Image (cartoon, rainbow, N blue to C red; front, side, top):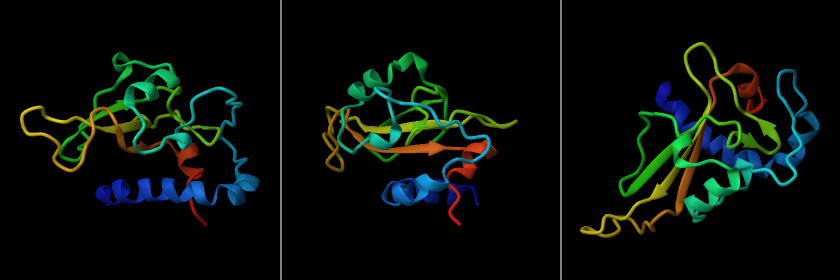
Length: 147
């Protein structure tokens, strides 16, 4: 069941952007904070191929802001995890939160080419390959429930 979460959540997040216009009418749920993001970072705007350093700069975070995680990534990639509310924004919704065991976080998976071996699967240094948002708190989970 735990592994199913790691497969379904990225798929749901990607599908969410395609049905965003329909969902906006029903997005006002109790416990979810809608914030004005004019000029602020939004995870929904991330695209594969963006430079990881540009992403961190636009969100106003640094490598020092990362949190420890035991998540795995693809061979030829590195990952950074953040629990900062600066990165936990998705379509204007704050996803920052935690439950009694875990804290919500966003993981950025990016290419890191070994200089001796070269690219293993067409990776490019510091380019975003995918991102993952782990949500553990109930109010934020409700935002992504499909009915």
